[in-house]
Image (cartoon, rainbow, N blue to C red; front, top):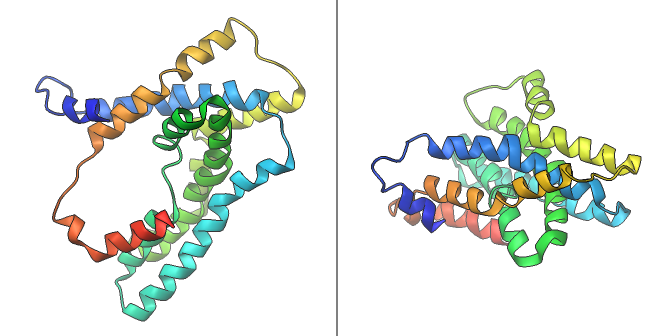
Length: 218
């Protein structure tokens, strides 16, 4: 992350670099991670819990901040922001590298389950509905479905599940290719986050920010 922050200071470094790195992660690395780990995961009912985490936390957060917002007379946009930011976690770009660093490849398998059928579908459905209710822009159901169906990591997650259920195992040289791309996840993701991380000290004084962060930590 520090490398990403320092690269922002380099004059000749392209302004669109974070966007390019994000695209590389979305279209290449995250699909490779899913194919590598989910295709050989031992499927069982115990795996439903990590998948359900986002589906439990987000509706609870929605009820909590909708109630507090009405009681305190907050603006609708503020309520929507607290629901979405407080009820969702960055389980992909930051979550994968952190879990991999702490728990290795085994932890990464669970992180993918928390992210793809969990956080990703919640952010592509319930979170967009919240944004539509509490924001100015309205989203059609068709647009929500399209975003979900054509998101590359989710497509490859479904492919990996299909490979797993069929009992097929990925062999060399494809296995080595997937391992090579997956190995770039941590450095590229955290550098991309560092390049986009901008902290305004005036915003840190906002009480609602601390309310949202406190809820998130709990």
